[in-house]
Length: 355
Ligand code: NAP
Image 1 (cartoon, rainbow, N blue to C red):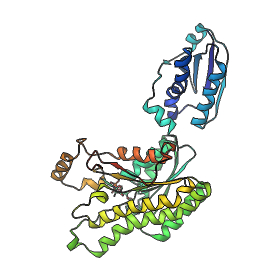
Image 2: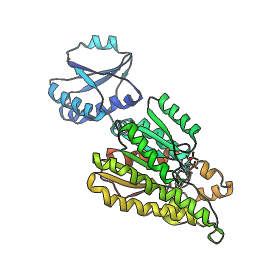
Image 3: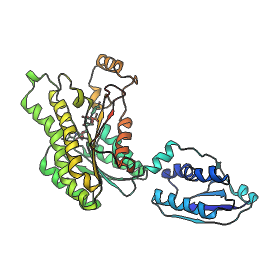
Image 4: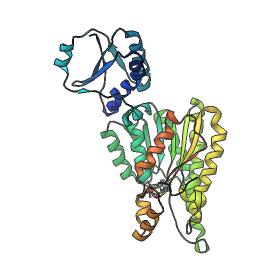
């Protein structure tokens, strides 16, 4: 039996999907040639694997090249014949898997090398999006008004092996948007992914709605997105790549009594998304919206239990959403897997509104 052995320099949670991905890449060869029987071997600081090659070293090497392209990290291998016995002596753990799994998808969606700017990242959906983008490999600029909460988030991302910096920002303040985005670009050299997530509600029936509450909601939820987009676009145009993701709402799609200001701001974001998508598409920049339904965060914590129970009855999936549900959609739209998706509003609402 002839084996090839390979190893990666670093082992981190990102490599959870290493062996699955490799097996996935090898699968067609295996089906065709019936020759590969890969074994994964985890050792101290690194990850090694071995595979029975039969006589197909060249095809196997081709797979490794594709793999190293995908993981975008230093990756070295050597090929040498090994004895069955030698392998079993040195294998602390052997894992045999050959199907496409969640972890493969995570690895394939890697955002390593990308820089993301997330507004409203101090809590709720924005915080979870920042964590998810960092987990997928992006360096994240987290922006909001509450520095203490941002610092906690930065520490959590760093503890998980990611990279993030906090920026105090009131998105309703045009000057602050300009200086903060500039500061982030000065620090990281670019912004690849913008997530316009910051948002507020000031609910009231329209007859009683104060002009100040209308203005505050429009300024924070909609005008801020226009301002942030305007500031990041030159960086994206320069590199001819970008992802703009606006967090809208199901109520921007269907309206909601008592939320004329909020619904107008969120419907405005959908129009903004389509217009920007048309303006910048030729430069490989996509602009999409994510429309959450009822998500469990501080924003919805103020609603009465009765309201929540009634709302859940209208959700075919039978539960309220979590920030992770939304972050998954954001991570997808930020990834290369969504390269041909633009101007789209992706509903994450458990089926509350369809079509
Ligand atoms: P949340 O827990 O209240 O968080 C809102 C975030 O926005 C906070 O981090 C807050 O940070 C930030 N923010 C508010 N005003 C800001 C300002 N002027 N400048 C900078 N940041 C500001 O709400 P959430 O549920 O996570 O909502 C996030 C987004 O999802 C919002 O756009 C919301 O409309 C949308 N959404 C939520 C739901 C839901 O059911 N939860 C449904 C549909 C859409 P600071 O206070 O630290 O500034």
